Amino acid sequence: QVFYPPAHAPRSAPHHGDKAMITYSESPCAYFRWTGSVAPHALKWAIPSSMLTLVYRALLHMLGYTDWNLNLPPPTVSETTAWALFTSVLGFLVVFRGQLAYQRYWQGLQLVEQACSVWLNGCSNLVAFCSNAPEKQNDVKKFQFLLSRFASLLLCLSMCDISGLEPDQFPCLDLAGIETEGLTFLDSTESSTVRQKVVLQWMQRLVVESGRNGIIDVAPPILSRVFQEFSIGIV
Image (tube, one colour):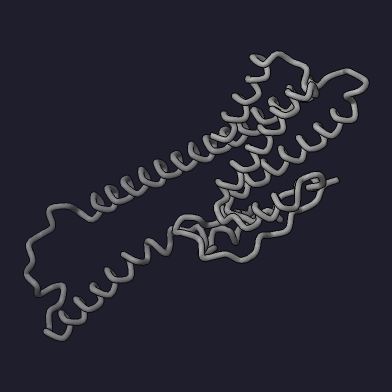
């Protein structure tokens, strides 16, 4: 059963930089949106410069100066050369920033895929390590049931930390089997990083107790590989 966890209660204002990920659409209107645009930062410099230029031209007009009686020396750089230099620098900056943003996007995507892969590999190994003894099958089902809930919750919290969105924006397995006290603690914790570490600790504790009770039938050195997979994903 898949459900969407309830959003957390309103908390204090987020710190600078803890904003939600910007979602862009393929609509032509996306080019004119204010959020995620460089226009606000560019206008901080363009508007004061334009105002100073207008004031300067107004003062020249009030003093009776015009373009043909200033007796200014001829410019050392022609307008064509200056325009070519400006477009070259602007094109270099646009291409450089676009390439850098593209690299960062794929780097982040690869890290997310790597975390999902190592967690999936660790959980699949635990399922494969479960005992085949008939008297252990009920305990094995309970272990697999709880492990899948922990893994789903951990992935959901990780995506919330990356995107800055609330947990109700991501699908997750139902939280049946998890103690209400633990869920209340997660809901009252403001730091998303702390919530991830708590859920990871629950998973590791579950694995250790299952290994002691014979639910996981594998040698300890091999079982330690699972903890390595979990640690790689959380980093």
